[in-house]
Length: 483
Image 1 (tube, helix red, strand yellow):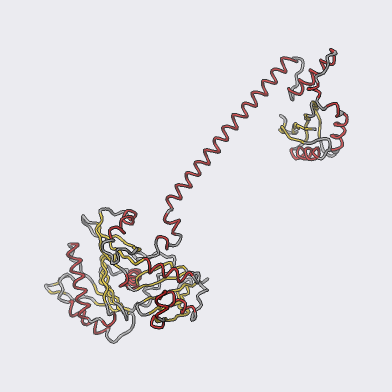
Image 2 (tube, helix red, strand yellow; image 1 turned 180 degrees about the vertical axis):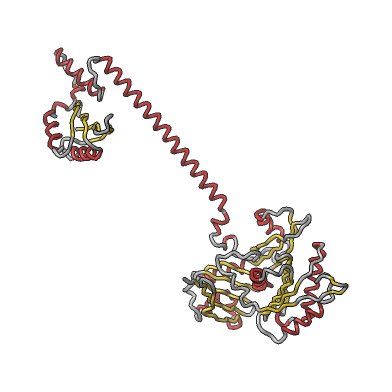
């Protein structure tokens, strides 16, 4: 399975675009194109230079086959600073970084997006290397690519990004000065103990002389050693963006000019050993920088509202706390409902017990009690009838319109012989019937209820009780039926 993404290399003269296909073990470029800013008309440039260049790119490449992008911007477009902070917490540094950088950034009224990492340098100071880019630039990248449903996942300075790729591929080298030389820019990154610790940018790039590079290396190393109090020996690594006949000359000049700089290499036998200068190609150094993969020490300016899943990532702790509070609240509500239901059941049981007690006291000769209220009404009616007392119409209700034989007939008609059922009690009063009995399983209880509901005489049938008897071979049931 493969998936592709768009890689854009932006410089001050144009955009180099590549479609990178990610395989299981390797990555390959399937399409590439170069757009020059010089081909953009002044009117289009005034509106949106990058957006117009992307529109021109869409005419030459298919931008609909992928949804993610990696953007490399000129290293010189980033403002680098080394700051001293009173703590080492990354969260706290993120909160104060914009205020600490405010006085160092070129546009006081312009918003910037920054990234940082701590330098592992012992001492009283906690040193931080930070990089910041104008938010308007990041916004233009997102706006232009959004028209093609492409979302940048990495926005990083190219020369600096090459250092992070070099660190991933070369585990044996610890402290070195990485010089990135491209056609239009140059960058110098000092790496101490495998941590990028200082960055300098300068122009004109690949045309820079060996003398100017040697002077920049000297100044950077001396400044770092003075600030930290170290005397670190650094190797020199030169990364050239394209093959050039000047590579050997630059290498020779660097070796010559840097050989007499104390602290570059250890002193052996009273003689200063010359620096190790290694020239490599950037091809492959940037191959490990892909969407949705974290690269250690890489400055990635897809942050804040421009970050992937930025809302969840930014407010994860608040969301987690809210979910936890909601779960606790829901648990308390359910617990409260359970407690209220238990109390209600206790009250119902107490009332039922009181009714049974009253009935037993009133009719001590009656040993079987199923529904004390209906049984009480039936017994009172029978006693009044035997004594010749007039029956209260409130007790009779609509029962005169309904004949008990009709009720029994309906029950007999609705319950077929195939169902093993035994009727043990039938209490009828004021349009309400309590039918009790037993059957061989619980399924028959539901079956009997369904069949009784189909009777025209019965308006509502409810199961008030269904439980296995003591022997466990029968199921006792009790129906409340409204006529």
